[in-house]
Image (cartoon, rainbow, N blue to C red; front, side, top):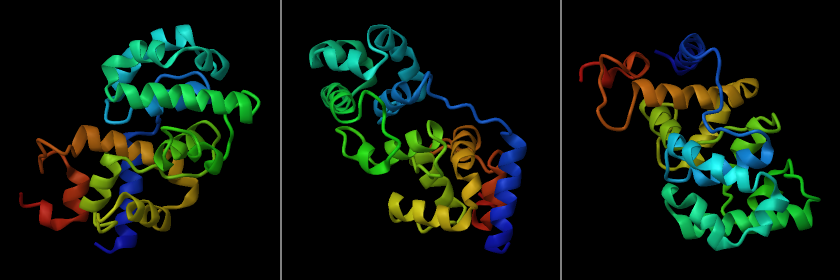
Length: 211
């Protein structure tokens, strides 16, 4: 299958499977989404969603979060792991939003990535899902699948992002990255992979079809 045909096939199948793409992290605005994405580092979305109700009950705005101590934040988020880094990051980014951005999450990659605990992937999620700016956040699912689909060489997430943006139309990026995540979780996991289930991979990359 030619790469251009594979790209169209992937888009068509993902749209058929996932016409709606609700964001898996519970949130109400740009700030609560930013917080949830920070908490999701090396943690499942489902686990994050069990922690954020109590956290947001205490602090659902940057001003409220900035007023909490690092220790108070840590107590509320402990079960998501990486607690010291995440609690310091949430307090620090909240203070920056209050003091540098008038209490509003900035719609800027540069401003977001200048915040503690906010890398390019986190900024991309917020820019795409909170502000509608075309972005292609690459997590482990997307990196794994685009490598399996021969859309990238798999050498780095940075290369995967560049290749994804080159191959797929910009007006599909924000929805497509979620569709790929959903497909990866349901049909093409890192462990327990099955050729019987992962029909997209077996179609676009014949080396998987016989496994």
